[in-house]
Length: 354
Image (cartoon, rainbow, N blue to C red; front, side, top):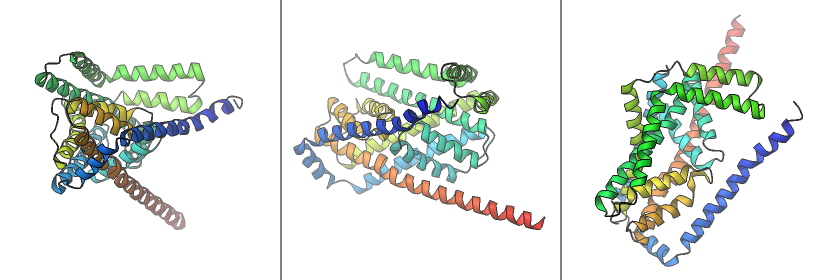
């Protein structure tokens, strides 16, 4: 057993850092290329000087509501799993999760592990916590596919170009497939169990107690049921998370007095979100700004308007969200430390009484 650990552990320790460094370098390169357009950058900076503060506030409120709805989504699924968590706590967890997802390498494992720990700390079972995280991933895929499908319909209705009908078919396929997975979770759990056993045969991991606990956890997840009404509600909330974040982008256009390219803005937003979740650079830093700007220009927005709107959108949805999220993470950590100290004091008092 000791001969295998030196082989596997070094790569697992340095590879996420290398991938993070490469992603940051790529993101910086995109930003350099983007900002190399000095005339456009100067014009965008000039436009930012005339941003409407009220519409800017509206964009910030839309982003806040998006994170709050993500908290509602978690609460709904955890309740199905048998745990009731407060909305305030879940909102704080959502803020911190957003910051982790946008800045820490190793996504989505790191933010999922953070949420799992916070759920368990507040009384959720291991099966209920794992099931909620897995279901959220599936529901968000359906939500984004639904939003992209709406974007395709809008584009087809406002443009003579019908070359993106294939995108619509892919969107429908993803929605149907993910919907089947939500309704027939036993198939997904069977697949997860098969993956674990295949990993054991190929790599020898997980093994021992870890393997037993993993397989037992998957079996307990089978006991959690999600009815048709709850399924529709979960999908609606997941779609609302994306829709409110999209509203932040739309309000950013209004804030900088730029016309919204309605026939392509939803597709541009969807493409940017797909780039953001790729495990290249956390939060898609640089890639989202450059890619979203290019696609918006391709759909008729001017370079200056597109760049200015994207910078405002990312300032709120990325930079501001990261700052607030890490603050929330610090508060959650302080609360956890206080709870541990209180538990230690109570345990010591009980021993003293005995």
